[in-house]
Length: 282
Figure 1 (cartoon, helix red, strand yellow):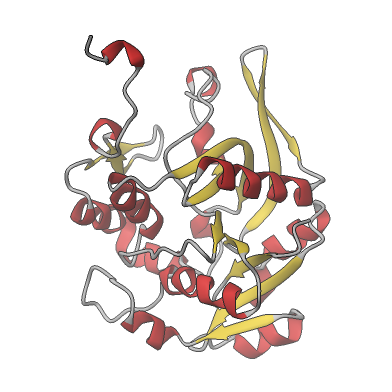
Figure 2: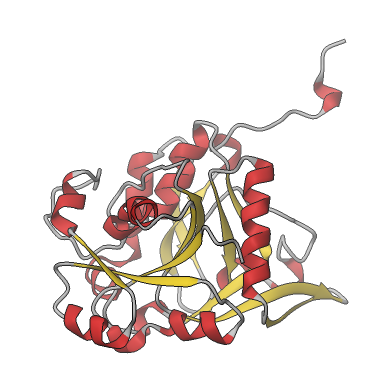
């Protein structure tokens, strides 16, 4: 494992439900882990009792530096921890780090066999994280992410099953370099806001679908961002990205049984692309 790498678990209000910590150890990660908590967390002392390395950052101070995209004065959001992570890792002497939410119970390889989507547990996370760091360095990506299970919806017709090998987005997990800092913006949907706006300026946000995280359903685990999502719903969440990237974002219905409003990215309008050689003028 790269000795200048650390896993940061961003969490709030649920010290008894930091599933990611145990998942990392169970699945072969032997490196350092820092549990990142803010100083407005009422359960802070319980975190300190449960975990050997807890970093407490000043949430109000971080909010003063963050473009929240609203004036609601509500800081129940992960964006502050995301933005603080670069300084935390640098202060602790690490160059590379991965930002992780607290609700992962599995890290898995994802692959296709006979047109079907398959997954199996990763048992060598050290090697996977090393590979993602190397991939980031070689591609020049600003950040690299693992896939989420929702990226594979659609079965045989899913783009990844059909052969797509990369996506121009990064959500939930972020492999980052303290020497290439960037900031998230928009109190909710901060990851989508970042990859659309910064992506439109030429920054590479890449998702590798071959490795993925499995999460507890967002609104079945109290604490974290759950309360904010329940209060505002996906309608408000999605409109943050419409505000930041109106040229490429719209709102549409998503889902089959439980339909809901969600953002939709028009990728032809979102990021620069390399033209194929056949388009070159004679």
